[in-house]
Length: 601
Image (cartoon, rainbow, N blue to C red; front, side):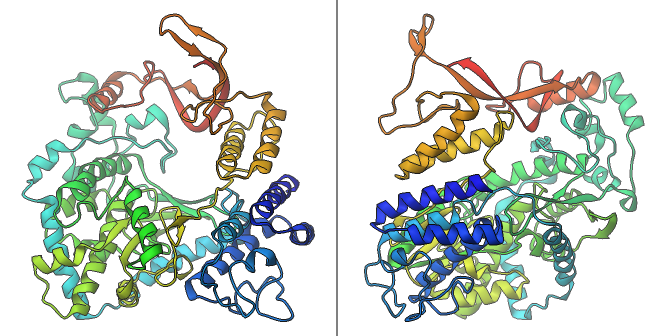
């Protein structure tokens, strides 16, 4: 906790110099409140002050209800904390200045949010609350009542859009085009690495659409494969392995809910997701360029322009995946029955919640399913189109659908919509059971945020974040890498005192680090001149070389042979830029397992 406080105080000194403010009283406030309240002041309370600032920028004034945990001045509603910076943004009565200081806005957000996104294990109470909320949200999906007219329009728009996405592709063509693969993480059965290719089970629901003899083995002609077919368990729906709901570190205020899928389900989910994403992103006339899964810059570009002209709003969805019901997705895919049958064959129907309780799932899927992201994005996209058509009073024709889709941009749960239609769009989304996070949604004022990029009046005011707790020794490689990256980011935005302090802390653990190119993966320090430290000359390549510390994945023994090994090789052939080592059948890497090794670069 002491190291976090020192980092925040270093940032405070730097932003004070940038804005011409004496922050000594603010430093005393931070120090005293950390002593009284602990680390939660830095990770929960301080970020709430930034939320209050963003709300005030949206509303055009600082309300007495903003930042209730900070003392107000005796003569106005403005807070005493960070008062020197606040005075450069609001007048004495709390009204937004006509030309507020961008440096002050950027500085307040930086000091408040620097450690607000640390990956921390939440308290037991917050974790229990997350589990209770997961169950309550799932139960609430049954009670959603949608106006008949809106539901009719949604179904028609879905038919038109999804027919264009899937097109005339037959089930046989889809069946031959998909390439299943495994994800990098664990599975509900606890199976990892190469062992995933030895499937412990293949549910009957999956078998009806994706026979094990076609997707679970290398070839039916292989004698070893025949033995595997006889050994694999064929589960009925009631006996299937449920998804394993777990809560992983996200921020101090709440954990991230992840549903870990069974091996076979995850394997085929990846296949369908890889097949459908490019069709949505590039080939459908309604969604191409407007629904994205890889390029966040589209939303960021519109967020920046909207912060100047106010044409667009940025909306953030709360509990996005957990509010997309199974019934809504079934209705949405009605025009593509074969594709729908395949999607639902790979959907897990039950979840195991911490404590041993197994319950049926009413949501389509939680985070952890490969189909969660594309399906939720399309559900939001179609709901917004439906809202625009319903409130325009026009009939939902393919032409009207196309015109209504032109001003909508979706990246997962980050939405860009016309600002003047935002209230009606929010009302429609909530009619479908979705929920807009109003603290992170902006449609008035000059502040916008989308896909991790924040803007005010066209200028970037995105803070840099420390993601991991400062490491206590060199063995915490992820912590060392995180602190090094944070130091370099502080350097680039002009927090040079903070960057110097962080460099000293890193070098106490790993020794003196050299200057490195901004593109390298090695540990080192960036500079505006892009200077590099060199330690020799490469005779073969006729280039300078450096011996640097490089974070390197640790490989552990994980042998795979027989038909399962052949299946893995078949699945990897033809995948561009596949990061596969030569000994991938003998060893594998577990996520987050790193070591620092010196290498010539």
